[in-house]
Image 1 (cartoon, rainbow, N blue to C red):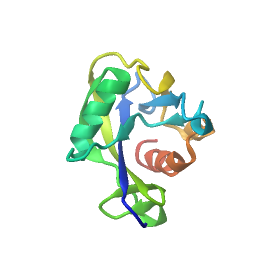
Image 2: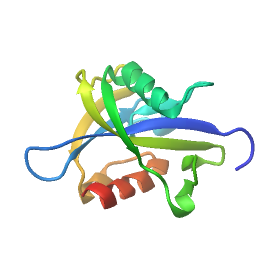
Image 3: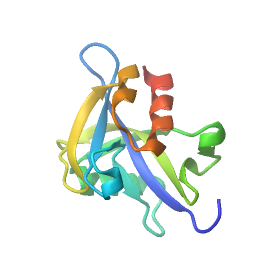
Length: 146
């Protein structure tokens, strides 16, 4: 990677279904046009001086109106990852992703999204049109939680 690195923070917000695998909260983007109608993990850019966990809490409150309890960081391995930094999104951007559990609020698309869905963490999760950089992360979630 060259140049300044932009850190994006996000959460894989999971809830236990009555039966079957846990469910993941997905968010469908409205912009930019190239990503419109693609699914992603809710989150956003880290602000200067902000730590990753605080950034996730801020972004989820702003974008979805929810509070979550954050668990482990879901780290990248191999070519998709940057040790200690997160998942590679582009040449100058990485994402730090944390497992999250909803503790307050009802998720609602307040900013940047037009739809939210709870979907089972099973192989059909990959059938959704994800932002390309998020697909390796979805595959890792399937390895961990399916």
